[in-house]
Amino acid sequence: IATSLLLAACSVGDTDKQIELEQEKKEAENARDRANKSGIELEQEKQKTINTQKDFIKYAEQNCQENHNQFFIKKVGIKAGIGIEVEAECKTPKPTKTNQT
Image 1 (cartoon, rainbow, N blue to C red):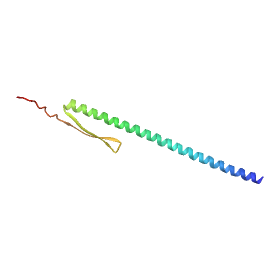
Image 2 (image 1 turned 60 degrees about the vertical axis):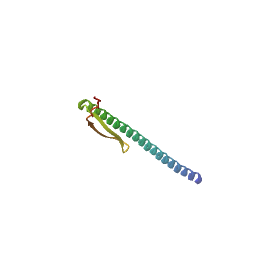
Image 3 (image 1 turned 180 degrees about the vertical axis):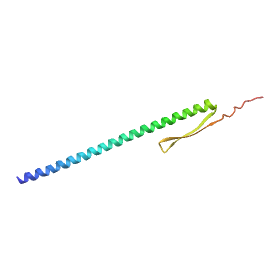
């Protein structure tokens, strides 16, 4: 009887440990899922920012041409892997050369 009680006590301890390990495993899975969701949301925000910047560039180009009759000069580059860096200015177009003889 003492042996069976000892085995029963050991098996209860094993069950508690197994339950604890399962809970830790589930918590780790939940943390991984939250991290993946955060990564997806970050990528979506990055795309929104890039699209907003592209829209602004289009607006500036149109404004420059329509309101100032000037060419829009821009330099675009990636900065820190996240945004678009833009330097832009309106330039007065150079007169075209004509061959007058």
